[in-house]
Image 1 (cartoon, rainbow, N blue to C red):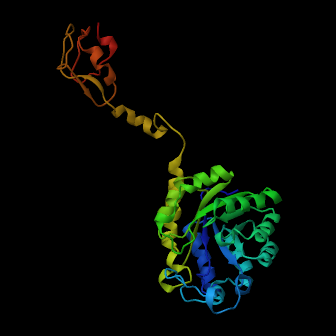
Image 2 (cartoon, rainbow, N blue to C red):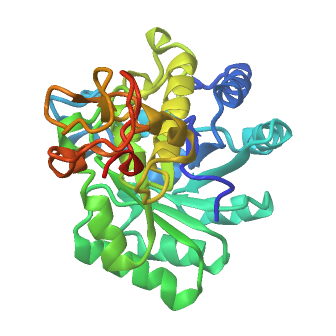
Length: 339
């Protein structure tokens, strides 16, 4: 499904601050950082919520980055204008990146289909939107789906919905749907259980600060890593607090690539590169000049480096043996030197 794993996605979200030139600069910077893909979010405030300014339409959680904001205004600020999608996708593709988006309603799916996106992302909060999932599945294209706060039963229902329609390649992302997320809440070992129980590839949509969770997820078998991206965190942006700047993203990409490479394969006996180093193991050497006929004892021999003599495991076997030849200090002990 992916050209390499982990497949690393820079999520632009609303960090472009409604500035098209800034959005383009983010695409260039993401490519320079070495990611595999950029992802947008496709919605309007009217497809996300109602323009109501009281009660549950206000963000009220004390620990929220967006406390006190009206949902409609927040989505208006964070949305990516639909007319930007095509030029941003074309720019990303010209830089060798995969470009796609998360649709948030059926009209967004139809729009993205008109742009011939190569795959889709289902956001964690939309995991229970079965009509949306059905529409995405009907495209026949690969799907990446964040699981967020979903129960396993909800995940099962979403996976079954997709599989009832087609054989879309499906990757499920472990995701902690708090912003920013505490690294202690990542629970990355869930990925292996999720893969075993669903038969899907797994990965991480990471809202923590730093690269630790992404590298750990790679080591645990993640095939996709998604991370929010910003040019300058101090300049703000709706998701800036848990987004990576270009230098940080580059460091994460390199660390994840290294972690993947370090996994290697089950290997015993050392790698090819280690074989030459075996000569620096210990072995049994003659420790002093000895004439033929000497009955060997602990004062005559020593277990030292390098390894051209008999292996140390033969120490008790050679003690009491009689030398059949003269031996010099520094000579590796061999069986044919003894009677």
